[in-house]
Image 1 (cartoon, one colour):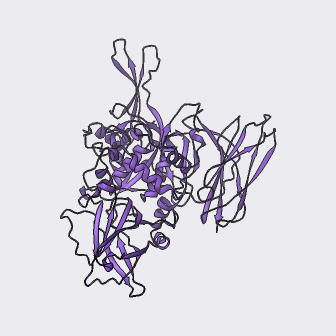
Image 2 (cartoon, rainbow, N blue to C red):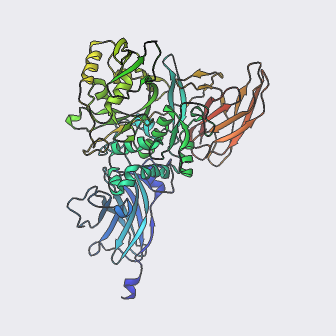
Image 3 (cartoon, helix red, strand yellow):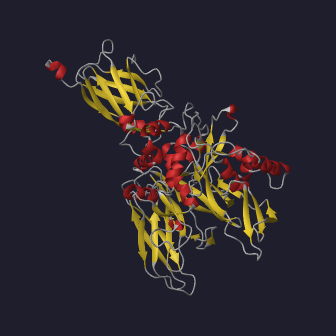
Amino acid sequence: MTEELKKPIFSGVDFQSAINNLYHRTSEITSKRLIVRRGDTFTIKLSLTQPFKPEDQQLVITAKTGGQHASEDLGTLSRFGYPDNIKRSPSAKAVWKLETRRISPPPDNTVTLAITPPADAPVGEYELFGKLLHEERLLGKLVVLFNPWSLSDTVYLSDEERRQEYVLNEHGVIFKGSVNYIFPAGWDYGQFEENMVDICLKILDRNSKHLENPAEDVAARSDPIYVGRVVSAMINSEDDNGVLEGSWDPPYIDGKRPTHWTGSYAILDKWFQEGQPVKYGQCWVFAGVMCSVLRLLGIPCRVVTNFSSAHDVDMNLTIDTYYDSDGVKREEDNMDSICKIQISRRDLGDNNKWGGWQALDPTPQETSDGIYCCGPAPVKAILDGYTDFKYDVPFVFAEVNADCIDWLVGSEGELYPLNSDTKRVGQFISTKCVGSKQREDITNTYKHAEGSYKERMTFVFATTRDYSKTDEEWWLEDEEFMEWMEEGAEDEKMEEEAGSGGTDGGAESGATPAEAGSGATPAEAGSAGTAAGAGSDETLTNCTLTLSGAGLFKADVDCQIPDLQPNNRIRVKFFFVPYKKGEKTITADFDCATFRDIKGSCTVNVV
């Protein structure tokens, strides 16, 4: 071999991460790592040791995900080039495209390439290889996400205001409480923290289907419905060592109370670092964490709370309560409080009859094809009682629209109906309005007006459908898609007096003021203060203040506070170094021996 052939061809590569990420709306995550959205073009610059002559040379680029399992037929490996006369498999899927933007002559010898991952490419981390003449080398790695801005992507969302809120907003509101007392609780999604990409990739790689068949699992990540079911299963820890362990009964000695959490990132990062389920979560925590993961992956989503939710364990679409002859209620009472996540599909076949919002629930309640997950269930199917439609529509229908029936159990087991309540389940189904912190009641999208003829006929229709599940229900075989939308919050200062309000789970929470100083700059210290007071005759002891905020604190900050004497107040001033620009939210959580989870938040403008 001559010295010319031995000479390396590639001398360097510039992934231009900063400008590419800005164009792909991923710069909030990082500017140091290339993160792109499928269906949109990104550019890289290759430096060569000799001129590139496309008239008699071919530059071949290979993109692969899934390691040794990558395959053209599965869409997890794509070979493309310039000129693009590559011989591919006849059944190759998800083929990438390449154009040359600029070929610089000597002595520069650089080639600027425009690369486009297809809008149906599996999401995840890719390796990019380059081959020219005798040399092939790894150029680097990149991450591909779903793209709500691309008309060709199945998660496309046309409204920019919704994209800003359901994909890019890191701060939200989850409605909690009970039918008689609904209150907003701020939630910090933190989906753009720098290691959130690796956290979400680990979640995908830890799911049971990936462990069983990694090749097919990675290929199926082109479908947001598949990804949604995987994430729904992985957020709870019931059968896959997932992110959160649920608990509805105190004490929470070996973990955090569910009401303590103010955001997703602390939970996700703890799971990522330790590899064990984080203790503990309840419905709104599961939903909030799931929304963070989906939003990072590029799937628009929002949290929806269903008050007076039901849990149908025997799949008869009624909630049955049994009493013995002495009037003692048996243990089959299935009432529960849950949070919902909604998604929207654009193409479900049948002229998109079932398009629109879909419901997902990561809270572990029942298995779906042997796995603790739920949905996506089309809300239109729930509304009209089509309980034979995938996924888990009967379960979600019962959560929002079941009849509650009381039965008397005779001495020999015979059943006598005592009472039927058609209105108890599925009240004040709530989500956050786009662009504000106001509550939007979306009950009428899940069920027809209570007591109406249409509502009763829908229930009768639903209970007569054949909705028995098939073995294939977990995994989609058709090309379908969904759009998931999560709420963010309009930044306002919350100035509420300390108080408490019961939730359906028995926890208590309230709010207390937090104050921000003047606008801060990344890498420059900012300051803020918060106040707490003892308004009774009791001294508050064991006082702790926990501070959090995406873009402001890398991790939650715990501050020990001296005991508070009766009718006294204490003001705590703290310093922090923000690391991201824009409007950010500081959340303060105050605990003491007498009461816990008194929360307040305020906006910080980082310039």
